[in-house]
Image (cartoon, rainbow, N blue to C red; front, side, top):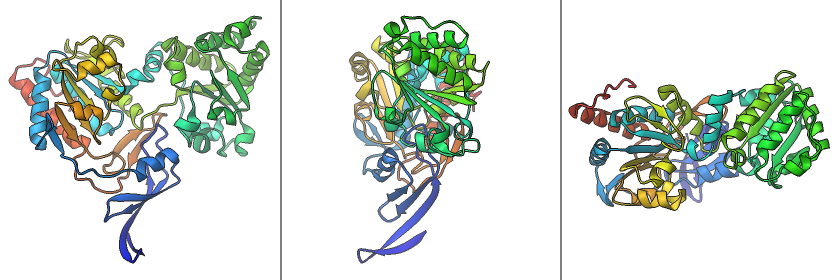
Length: 456
């Protein structure tokens, strides 16, 4: 901490080294923050990308009530009591979000859902949910980003645009950094971009592969066949939009590299084919391991969406869309995922944690969320259309800026957060811990058969 004279006034500053940016799944943990302790703002974010700077420098503590019920300010305990009663009285309650909060808070949610016999779902169900399904079908040839930096001489991005979505992915991990076995950085790597159109990411490519929209699965399966020694069909360009010569050249480069990696985005998972696309890509990586070392990984978006999947998985056995109405976890995307549950009008209570479905869900789902048929509970770090529409709204502090804890990087590596300054709002962990205890007590009072607190 230091004092500096600026504009004829003394500014109390604090420097936070090795802070973690939780904007995207890269979770860059080498940021140096300069904090104005008097104004409670971050004035500098050294080494952060354009998205990270916006995340840190635009963070302002709003003068808002901590808790509201139907727009009226109440105490935090009153809001927790109302939320607990709404959840315990509901016949089909759902909990959704979790991707922008710490793992310690996420782990409080599963016992809540177990006690109320509800459904827990993360934002994965609307992004890389198909990849989660594919993992269970074909496995995941995984790695850490550190391995990629130090070893990968073949890097492929499929159906993603990291130049805009993960700006430091190139410079920290996959394209330009010099590694232990990649001493010349990009000069030692072959970078391939596969997409349906030219993006900013394509600018770094040694090879750009433009596939026809909706033909990812066909191209992946042709690549798999070529890797196995099956002749590439003459009409491959007619089918996929990619020339036969390029497919053959690509397969040769993949089979002859020393360490290959494929990062894939929502262009693969949110198009025709969905989990079949993800499964085919990971099966391709597995096939290539007969010839060299090859891995694949989804490029995750939200700061701790990977953590949400990990926490829900080790507590329930499944990453998202998990229902407890029978007293044990059941996984069935399409039945228990939030968009589907709301669109069908089934949920009569919905607790949304660090997410804003009212701003981006399909209209039928939004209409049900905002209707009298569904008690909406919002726990978020800021005012959103969801929190404004909520019956119970609780505002919390921001993870990584105001509170510490643990997040998972997109490669499943846990990272500890270093908060910059305190907030007048409670943390997610405090709120969800109180809510868990109150829900569990109510469940026992109502003789719910599964109110065992076995996850505590």
